[in-house]
Amino acid sequence: MILKCLVIEDEPAAREIMHRYISQCPDLVLLGSHEDPFSAQTFLDQNAVDLIFLDINLPGMSGVSFLRTLIKPPLVIFTTAYPQYAVDGFDLEVVDFLLKPFSFERFYKAVNKAKDRMLPKSATLINQKITVKADKMIYQIDLDELLYIESCGDYTSVFCTDKKLITHETLKSWEEKLKGFSFQKIHRSVLINLQKIDHIDGNMAIVGKHKVIVSEAFREQLISQLLARNITRVG
Image (cartoon, rainbow, N blue to C red):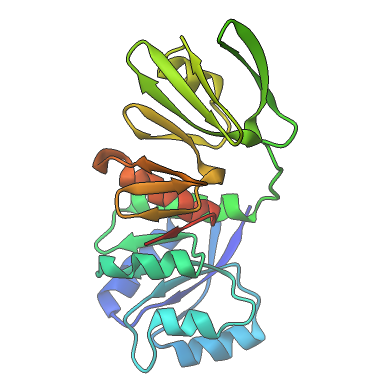
């Protein structure tokens, strides 16, 4: 998959780095580079673009404000030296948020997220079931109803939309069982369904009526995944 991209960056040194990184990616084609949002808008009016690398601090109008003016924006990756703008990225459903200075490896990871966003998505959890042994019974649980799993000593608590089950399985066995689906660790003892997170409030993930703690070690990875999926917001 080849993505046609545009760079909007007013700092010459940062713009040069972006050009170099893009030239190293066989799946990117640079259509243009602009120092301000107004000239970029003129370009967008006349050209189809798949992806914009958008600086936030720009002359005349911020990248955040510019993106809000676009009626049908392409995919966007924010680039900035100011981490406080990450929340705006969630609100605007951007692909990723690159904090300057960033490595080529981090840049290319963002590109891969954009490519993944371009692929048609299937509802992988719909009609998928998993077998759970609990309370001397065997349950068939729809993965779409599974909210999160919490390790409690030798047991795991399985929280579903309508029930809570206690099993003798380890959290590691659950990780293996759910590999390939939208589940991720947010704490050493918690595995959560990313599609069921309503929002992040500080160090808590809100899932329905549940508040689940997010450890600092997993928070950045969680936010990155949620950005890629466009399924939540940070508060």
